[in-house]
Structures are given as C-alpha cells and as structure tokens.
Image (cartoon, rainbow, N blue to C red; front, side):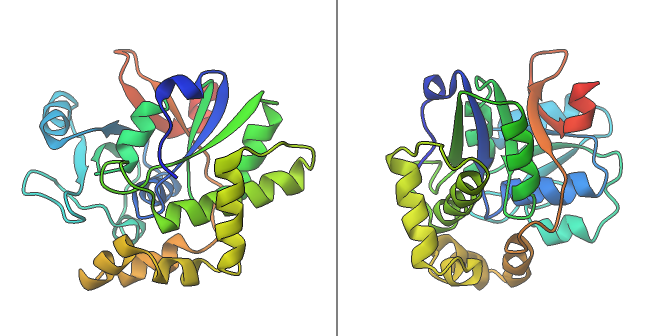
Length: 242
C-alpha cells in the first residue's frame, strides 16, 4: 500500500502512518510537550524553514541517518528520553513527511501510529466522516509499499470495523486486514519481515521497534493544519480546536 493522490483524500478523514519512524516520532514529541512540528519534503527546504523560525530544531533522516545539517535524527526513543517541552520542530524524512504534506487536502488529517491508534480512531469517528482513509507512507519516497505500514493499517481497519461494523472496506483495506491477520496481529512478527526494519536494526535502532509496537500506549492526538503563512503544521488536537 502506498500514499494515494491528494485528490483522493478530498472529503475524507485521513490517518497517515509511517511506523518506521516519522509518525511514531510525532507521538514521542507531542507526548513530551512539543508545540508544533512542520513536515517538510527535503533538507534544503528544512534548513530554510528552521532558519526562519527562531529557536526551532531541524530533525530527520536520509537513508535512516541524520545528515550534517540536522540538529537531531529520526528516532522516537531518542526524543522520548529528552526534554522536548515547547519545541518547534522542522521534520524531514524519506517517506512520512511527504505523505503528510500530501494529506493536507483531506477534511481532517491525523499523524497516527500504533501507540495512539485507539485515540485517533475515536476522534475520527466522532467527526462522522463520509470516508476514512488510512494512508501508508511506504518506502522509497512512497514509491513502494512497506510491511510495517500495511500491517499497522490492518490494525486500524480491525479497530474501525469493531467500532463501526457496517463500514464498507475497499481493496486496500481488505489487503491490509489480511496481512495483519497473517502475522497473528503481532507487530514484532511483522517488523521482523520488514526490509526497512532490517536496515534500521543493522544501524542499531532496535529499541525503536519495541517503542513503535506498544499499541495504545499513548492518547496524544496529532492533527495536520496550516499556520498563518499557509505552511503545513502538526499540532496537538486541543491546540487546533481552540
């Protein structure tokens, strides 16, 4: 499963998933008190945006590792262990931030992961959307599907069907559901078969897998909106509703 074209998200409530690791990083940042995260497609734009926002930090990766211009990398456990209260962050990743930017046209867009799954689903369903789109960021800039995102999408579909039994499923949702059940609903089993996960393990990021697999460990809701300059920005849902 890969990100849909932006036009397909008009009229939908979208939940964007990048389990390794962007949307899981967002959960770590906002549960730690960060105030805003700006998703950006590349580091050229990221450096320019960081330099224009006083006190902001530039985080992210190229090939899973931070380039020299980044202040920090893209590991959720790194941020979970830090004091990130009131941080404004500019975030660049190979897949997740691009998928989020592509979701700006949805009626509602959340940054979701396994850690905040139930909270995100409850929030989306209370808005009574016409459609719910689970957006998998995928690999290689969204050009290829990823095991971990598709597995997580299956977990979301299962929970949505439990809450709304009459919801009709399209082909991608049915495929994600089959993959989720094929792995026995076990994140660790799915993660072990992920090519991207194998790459991250070789780089020493094993702790990120346990963190990403902790289903419903967090209730932080993270929504995508635009700032006063029209730039896509992620904030906690209460900050967007007041």
